[in-house]
Amino acid sequence: MKNVDKYATFALCVAFACVGLTSCTKSTTEKEKVEISILAENSWYTNVDYADSKIVNTVIQNSGYNVNWKLNAPSNYYDTVRTLLLEKNKLADIVQVPDLDTNADYINAGVFIKLDEYMDDMPNFKKYLESDPTIKASLTAEDGHIYYVPQTVHTSNYQPCIMYNMEWLDKLGLKVPTTLDEFVEVLRAFKASDMNGNHIADEIPLSITADFLPYMFGPAFGLELVNGFYADENGVVHYSYCEEENYKEYLKFLNQLYSEGLLESDFSSLTRDNIVQRCKNNQTGIIFDFSWQMSSLYSAQYSEYDGSKPIFYGAQPLSGKYQGYYIGRNEISGLFGVMENSNKIIDSVKLLDYIMSEDAQKLYCWGIEGESYIINENGEEEFTETASDDTWLQKLGINPVCMPSRQSVEAADAHLPQWHSDVDKQLVTYIRKPFPFIFATSAETEIDHGYTNYIARYVSQEGIGFITGKLSLDSFDLYLKTLKSMDIASVISVKQAQYDRYIKAYK
Image (tube, rainbow, N blue to C red; front, side, top):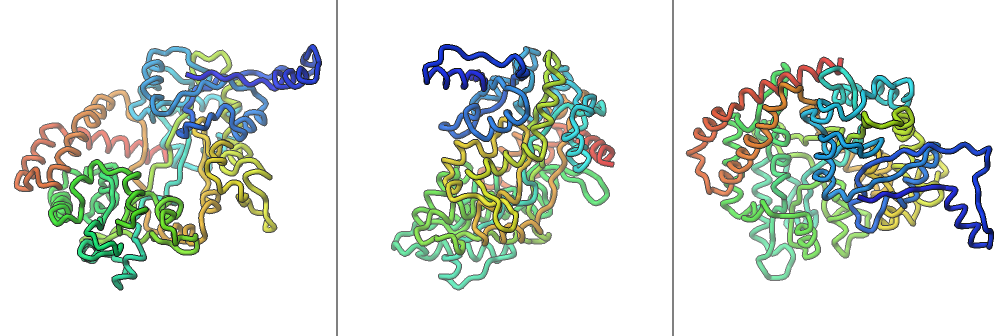
């Protein structure tokens, strides 16, 4: 765990020492800044340290506080911090929660304060909650209190979508498919043709990781397989993985793709790095991934790509018996709380509140004016040429995960070519909201743990077996009986109660 102390006066002392001064003392009229400790994740970029990044330090400097950063590598943050929190160790004044506390483990253990009791000291956060009832409903715990300040992501923009290699489609004179049947015909054409012209049968029609299969095909069968749970128009909660007719048809379809070699044999181990390499070799025709990757990652692997038009183009979802759609994300991606055992609670909530202010969030999304962005003649933010260097921008500290944040669609658009942001606005029309995030009650926790630890794993394992043919669909009834014996009905009842609480809190 890294502990970094930042003192402006220390920097001045060093500067004075360099020119021969022998002492440096703080003015007696200067008010001592309160120091707040924050335990959080450091950057995923190994060459970036948020404690030294200009954006993070500018936010903290503008807050009027000093921060003692305690930053952990994100790869081991959960394992390191979760146990220490549950043991109620005094870790820092403010802590980035290592997970979303779905089962309210930290809340029930009394680890964090009730932030809603300090709203007089948090006008920015209060305004934010009032402007977004969805977030407020999700953050409201069983006892009616709010314990966390969130980190949020885009929910409709730049979501996972189907991307087609337009050069391949044009070469065969094919249109972008809109139905499952048309899609299969395109896959077959890609597989049967020498699309990259190297006279080797190395074309891989579809590149998709196992995690994205539910996003791509589930809705066409009337299924919400990303979360698994969904509420119908009457507010009744269902579990897609035990819907007898539709889920079986979904598995039958994917097994057909697998049997024909249209879904590769090792799809369950495919990574994004593998897909990037395929793009470099012009080996794949269709990708499913976050649409953010469309231009900045996949199209960029082609030497002919100049940013003016796509190589990979994001298109509408596929329809089958049901109208297709894309599933958006839940807005909350991270949580920050003030520890109950902090002796600086008021200052901590004030610091969190400043970080949620519009000024701080502008720094988070755009960086430093004159360096990473300028205000153009239309009075709009615009990234500089220097900011097109992602390595430079990350070292500056753009979008730091170590503090509460709200992603900006405008900032995302400004990073991308015009065609890409135009495509995104079209894809937004196909997005549906996922099952809402809400904390479990103490009584629900054991059932939720049972679902996560046993049922969800069983469903995933059996699904792969059915798709690959290792399990015959003749045994699908046995699969359903096993789910019933694992008490999936109780899990659905819990999700129904949670959904009902969410709707009540929303109102």
